Image (cartoon, rainbow, N blue to C red; front, side):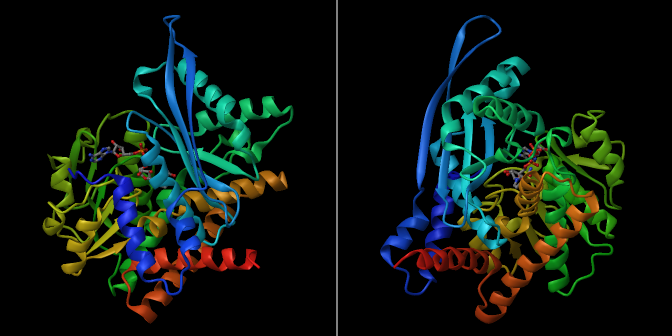
Length: 417
Ligand code: NAD
């Protein structure tokens, strides 16, 4: 594992990107580098034991230049202000790149949800809304799910927020259950978007998806649906991993079966799947033989110590920040292409945007409409990045980041005298 924290990694990528922007004034530069607002609160809840416990909660609003802030709420023991800051800035670049009318935000509660009951988690969500609700709103800052939060927590959020306002505000949060004003197609959106970006990149490299050998690190929401979609397009998913280890099948897994077995809880880990020919460690998956490596687990997976052992020709960042700057440099030196997170995993926030629009319209789109519009948006975003790459020969990460920065700069200038 790497010692480089996510916020240090993002600072490094951002300062390299800013070096390539001509004529950026100091004020605008500061606007890119620092958050508009950083909030820290303490949330006290009654535990099942009748004792009380306090948990730190955070919300970072990095930028609202393009519109209300948008970004998830994470429940994890590692959550702190630095992590939220890094993830909030990533959301700013991601929304700008996909041309969404949103800025970037992120938040969370430092807790271990595995040790909390449903009632305690409900109290945490209510506490978060009570302490931070004044700074959140459909036209201010719109949260969404992130690690260890999902539709259930977003439903709780909507309910508490609406109760406090005395009116239903479905557009205050996205990623809600379908029955509670959620959008069809939201659950699959990030994984499908990752698959779409992977297919565009593989085609751009002059390769065929039919028979391409794909390794997927992380078999959660993002990894599962990316694998399913890629297999539908002819790819062979030859390796998958989760927090318990990696599973390999040289002929390609029956991904639909694997996805159903994992998501239904029939198997706890991919290594228990009947189609597994051999298993290994999570690290083995990253350096196994294959054509495409999809990173859909955690930050910092590829770093200075393992980048030289990656055997795939294309690496796709389904997760946020899964490659450190040093790891990225090593991959670049070896001619391995990388599709960066702000391009590859934008599908989630794109369909969150569609959910927000549907809530404002009080209208529900068909799932095919959502998926078609997701593809259109992924395609136009990809086209812009490739167009810039063809002009400048920047790698895809810098082309993407600089496009985002320039989009925000243009808007800042329009607002000035
Ligand atoms: P998830 O919790 O559903 O899945 C994460 C998966 O990673 C699990 O299968 C877990 O077992 C696995 N994992 C954990 N540690 C691992 C390790 N060391 N090696 C291999 N696998 C490991 O989370 P998710 O929603 O799929 O999110 C994954 C990443 O994608 C995160 O970085 C998240 O921020 C990012 N992301 C998610 C979305 C979304 O809509 N869900 C959108 C954009 C970005």
